[in-house]
Length: 211
Image (tube, rainbow, N blue to C red; front, side, top):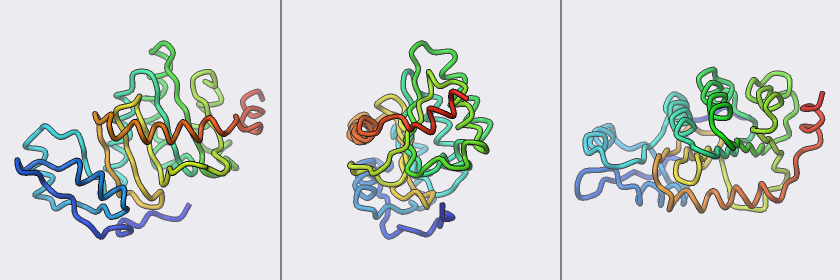
């Protein structure tokens, strides 16, 4: 996958509401139209001081990695991931792998679903998350998305039906995280489900799990 360019897609601004908090409606609207961008530092400080918004604007690998770990750790039953190539900068990291292992081994009926935008290829031998999926195949299901028929673009991680890390472009770290917004998360989860149900388990993945 091409290197992320943190300047890509920035031609808008996240706004504050009348109380000085980050306006989630503005942020999600800009993301939907592909015009999201970094909010000024004073905006982020004001939002943090207000303490009531659950949405965070992300602009760097470090911020996305932290958000991915936080959202994944908040899941109670399901984690759904849409990624082009199991992005090792996010999903082949020890902290994330520990979160996933704890999630599937300590919670009854816990399930991790992963949709890959690209064929797994060499990642079968090199990606630790993929290897964990082979060992815990009853809890971690990895499918190749093939030709998606839905509107999913970019990459996302969804916890249950209420928390999300969402990047409209998979080649950029710009995005948002929201820890409690079912109204915005559920439509994206439905898009994920459409692709998931349209793609059977990859025969190559199934074979590698049995080997």
